Amino acid sequence: MYKIGLFTDVHGNDLALKLILKEIEKYNVDEIISLGDLIAIGPNSNEVLDIVTKLNNFSSIRGNHEKYYLFGFSNPLSCTESTHQDWVKESINPHHQSFIEGTRYQINKTIEGVKLCFMHYPLRSTEPVHYEYIVHNPEASDLDNLFKDVDADVICYGHEHISSFIKGKKLYLDVGSCGCPYPEKDITRGLILIIDNGKVEYIPLKLTYNSVEVVKDMYRKEMPERDFISKNFYLYKK
Image 1 (cartoon, rainbow, N blue to C red):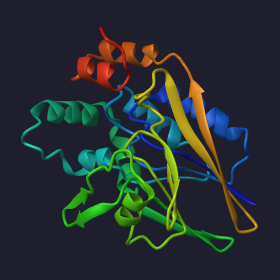
Image 2 (cartoon, rainbow, N blue to C red; image 1 turned 90 degrees about the horizontal axis):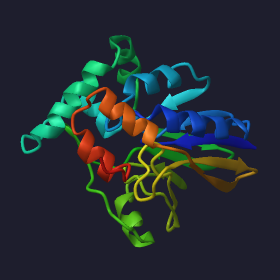
Image 3 (spheres, rainbow, N blue to C red; image 1 turned 120 degrees about the vertical axis):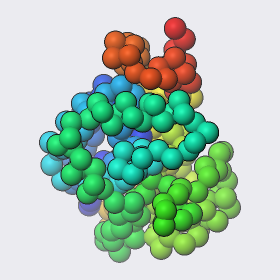
Image 4 (cartoon, rainbow, N blue to C red; image 1 turned 180 degrees about the vertical axis):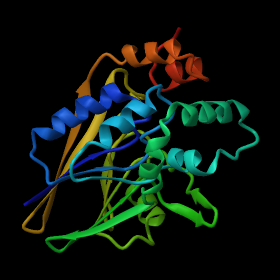
């Protein structure tokens, strides 16, 4: 039996991350994988990196926000997000840059004959890197098409923030955001993936907490876009 603890889209929410890690510990997992976007949106990206870089048997996918950190945010139509991304980069201790540089866009494993793929979301181009547009409320056929080029039996991913577990030609496990509660309030999510004699099982993790404490940090730190983010990602209105 092999067990993997999964979370994704922590987005600078250290409080939610601590809760998910505490829950993952109960399952005595063999390793932990983040599916990307440890940073940005939330106010405590540096604190999140402080936590994950101390974990044992841990690896992380590169999400779009790690890409922005490394290569810059390049959407000229979104100057407000550019300001936010600049603030995020300034808030992160430079000694974490080597960790972010070491993240990968995809991790593949074969465990007990089961092919596993871990990613943030499929890429539509690699030079430069761009992610596919998010398919909202996907059906099996949508995911079969989206992941058609991925050679795996089980694909674990994030990016959309909303969890879903769908069986098509492959098993698609969207873990759902750890750090952004929307579309529910005060929720954090994760997943335990179990491979047992070639059989795949999974246990969704869903915990409640008081995320207003994270929102308070946004205002205490005067984080750019805090009004928009607290309303749309945390469902708190000032």
